[in-house]
Length: 270
DNA sequence: CGCCAGGACGCCC
DNA sequence: GGGCGTCATGGC
Image (cartoon, rainbow, N blue to C red; front, side):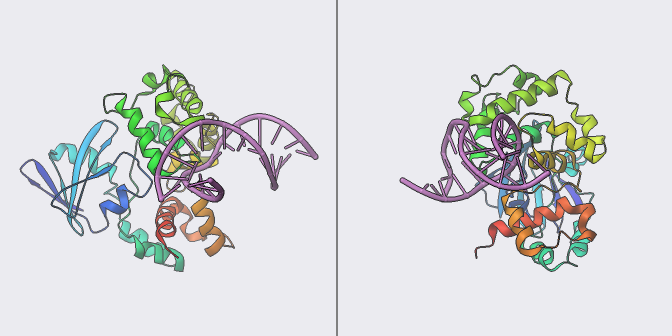
């Protein structure tokens, strides 16, 4: 990645990024495509820091109204620009299916998201579809003036007071998660640094957090790239292409491989 | 209309 | 420990 400052914008060159593939692949739910004269433009947030970012053409981006300090201190990390995805894809391409998945959507990057927002978002995601997940999270943030609620804010709610979310049976899970995080009973920073099995167990102590949601929080919210969320789509990939198990060589970055595979299988028409 | 969704829980055996 | 019905809601 290289960057140059141009007025109030930051121009970025990064071949291993595609905004559509990265911001609309089911890892984050608060990015919205807006009309623009560029290839595509998205507006969204990291915690409560807003950003509008455009893809001018393949591999070329504009981070609008961003200072160099903001870019280097925040967005550079969020987009995981320090990681060499070309090297990762070369490694993955040893496997035939992974090779196809990387070729299909080579511009996916694993965003380094906020653990609290991820926890809440993926509790909402269970047995749900992506458009409706986005809608519920929209209503949650609209209720907080456009920002994502803090643990303290959400801990004051009850399943009844969250009825406006229309999140169904998940509302009671949101309340349990908020209560535990707000009280300190669940320490997300400590979990992020804990051995992976210990971290899994601590997350699953929260009501409504099972194996799948725990893996998503570890992967997307704590950047534990060895975490491997298995949903209905990945189950299909494993059954169809990996009857003898997922390749050992990709295990340390299984979560990133999972992102390529998830996007690949979901968009494969036949 | 019926089937499904980036699942987890509670109960049963 | 594994299998199955249930849980709200709405996208398609």
